[in-house]
Image (tube, rainbow, N blue to C red; front, side, top):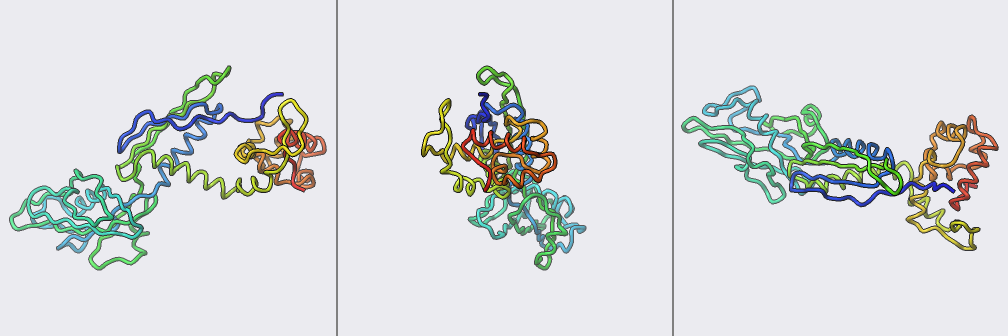
Length: 325
């Protein structure tokens, strides 16, 4: 009998890695899964990894961003744009402040004085230059944690200090993320996928941590849709047949194996096209979703009849599973 289970990929492999860039590979992915996982992980990494950014700026002697400051080469808008490029690592959940005072010469991000919970991860970032005698650049910024991009208009809805200039905030610590998929051999098949991911950060988070966090976010989204743990608890004692033998009395499925079976997509099962279409149209995509249905519930589906019901019951029986009573 043809195997109905999808081969699991290998563990994550580190190709190269430093503090800001990592290259990782996952081998042995089922055909097509390279792009499925690669695109999903890339989108999550780029949009959903939290980070820290400047949300408020106070510059001594400046009331608004359209001002100029005597003795400073840059105007205030340019100075704020440079400040927005400064990257921080914030260990606490509450916003923190950092101050910078330069009375002569070039001001860089390394000139910021920060608290213990705040670290500048882009110390070489240029901010401005004080050129006038007796002039100074005195800046205080508020750094907060967030997700994605938040406009200054949204930030202005929160409490704003007097004299503070709100800025657009790009919280994401990700500089870039790309992926590539190539075919590889697994057994006799040559169309399995090797997924290579390149993750680049601003230094406030390690590339591997960003990738692992993206995987956790993806899993949490799936768990919200289908609680695999709960299903495993209710189905764990169901008997399964040994290969080539009749089902043995009392045989039980390993929890980890059962979880993998429940994640199996129905389009990989030996079902007729008519049955598969009827299930898909009803939003049933996996074995875990299928066993949540009763016989009566399936028979109510458009295009689903007794023949389809027998097909489903036969396939589930091969896994030691059954429809909901």
